[in-house]
Amino acid sequence: MFRPFGRHSRVGWAVTGSEGRVSPEVVSQTGNASGGSTVIQAGGNVTVHGHVSAVPVDQPVESVPLPPGIGRRPSPPGAFVGRVAELARLDAAAAGRGAVVAVHGPGGVGKSALVARFAGLRADRFAPVWWITADSAGALRSGLAEFALALTPRVAGLGPAQRAESGVRWLASHDGWLLVLDDVTDPAHAALLSDPVRTGTVVVTSRVGGWRGTATVAVDPLPRDEVVELLCRLLRQEWPEADLTGAAALCDELGGQPAAIDRAAAHLARHRLPPSAYLARLARFPGWTPAASSDSVPLLVARFHASPDHEERCRIVWELARSGTTAAREALRSLTPRHAIEQLTIREALEF
Image (tube, rainbow, N blue to C red; front, top):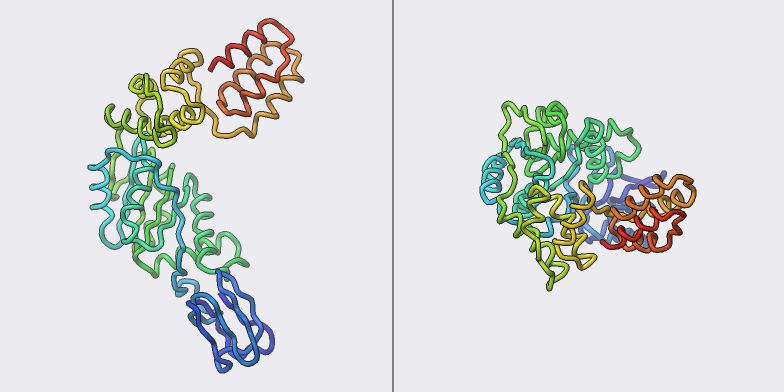
């Protein structure tokens, strides 16, 4: 976006668009560029490197054209199996202007992965695709405010509520877009947006029911053979020669939840462990899950050394063991036990 300023501006226009040259009759001033454009003034000409179109500075946000490349959605699932029927139902329900679809089911069953897959398969149908984690009304407003800011930096000076309203006005005056409201906890929150805005497509994911008057796609647990296939695919993507011993039993133990399967596969691939090793740890430590970050390791080590209580120190050892990261294992090896029970606990933790 090129916004003229100062007393030498002849016309109140912002310049956006593809590479082009703007004559002195249109613009004659010094300006700033954002949105990826570079503006160079030499003599009587202004050369703009980037996409060019003339947009009035005071133009309403809802009439701002969609900038190229605008969109936000999570990365596609590392592996995707099954869900043929669910994808077909979602595709049919999302057809047509003003569609609102609620994809609902238990936590961890793969609702978000299903919608991400749908958005990827239908990327040519929607522009833009904007993904909002909408687990509260505040989070929904924040996501809409970020959308407005992505459309135009002009709204940066507005408050969050005003930016959110600008995003809603843009959606209400355009079609062809897909808005995903992920992890909605109250249907009333989604209704704040979907009721007044019926020009594009809104897809909601939620663990709750109560979607009266809204098209729904139920997502149930995957069949056992597809769950096992998912684990094997994820594991072999990172570790082609993976030992898959115990894959089916591990999937059963994890309840067939794709989210848990994904975490398990990442942990096994990182540490080059067969599924049977994960099973053994679950048997020893029910409810154990690998952590995705090593950020807490230094804090846990400091707490271990500071605590005078051997039971507390043993609990910290298991917290480190649960993380499953390289940093945590190195930290376990560095601990100095004060009691025999701590030494035994550390030894057992390092076995996995």
